[in-house]
Structure formats: C-alpha cells, structure tokens
Image (tube, rainbow, N blue to C red; front, side, top):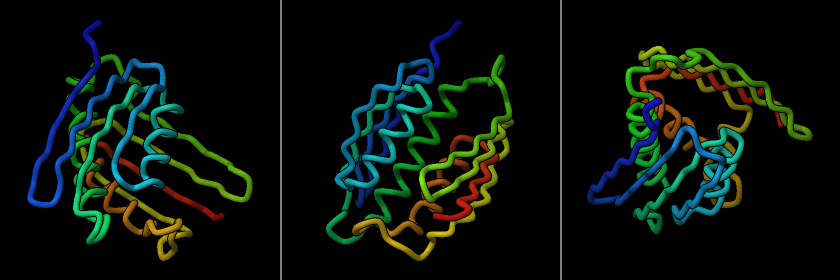
Length: 158
C-alpha cells in the first residue's frame, strides 16, 4: 500500500503555514498556530482520527484570527486531498455523532471528490475565550473545497 502522507505549504502576506499529515498514523500531533483554542481542536482531531498531524502556522493574529484559520483550512484540505490520492480502497462515506457532556455534534462526510459544506452551529455567534466560533465555518469551507469532500456539520446544542 502506498503511504498516505502529504505535506503542503502556503505563504501569503498574512500567513506562513506548513502542514504535514499521515492518514495512517497513531494520533500524534504537534500544532503551533498562535491560537490556543485552535491548537487544542487540531490536536483532538488528530488524536481521535488516529492521524499524525504537524502544523506550524504564523499569521497576523495581532489583527485577528481570520487569515490564519481560513488559510490553515486551505492547507489542511490540500494535504487531505493529496494523501487520499485517487481515493481507491477507502470508505467513501462516514458519519459520527459525538456527545460531550451538555453538547451534541453530528458530522457526515463524503470523500467522493465534490466539495460542499453544510455548517449548522448552535454557537455561531459565540466565543471560546478570544476565538470567534463563527470562524470555524470558514475553516471547514476551506477544508471541504481543498479536500474535495462533501461535509455536513450539525452542532445541535451545548
């Protein structure tokens, strides 16, 4: 089996991002985005997906987090697309419901090569510390487009 790994870089006036991933990893991650909450979310993604993820992102976070979050979605999505290759031998569809204390989220994925995002969140207008949760929609849109995946995220409550 061919290694399902990828590394992508993106450098703009606002950001300098490098992402390396191994889809057949063990959940090891190293994330340095300058955004504490976002580091935490990426680390949990890697751990629970059992992928190895190495993220280095520098951005104009003194202005806001938008460029870093969106550009990181573009780079992560491109890595996923590259690592999936021709997408032979994969399970194209997936679904998960995740209860965490008072919260419930549901996600459905189609890796068939067509990008589309549905993002419904009970927290769209809220913040986690200084992180605007509404930025997650832009992150997942960028991931969806670059990974060529159909992604439905429904954060029901909590």
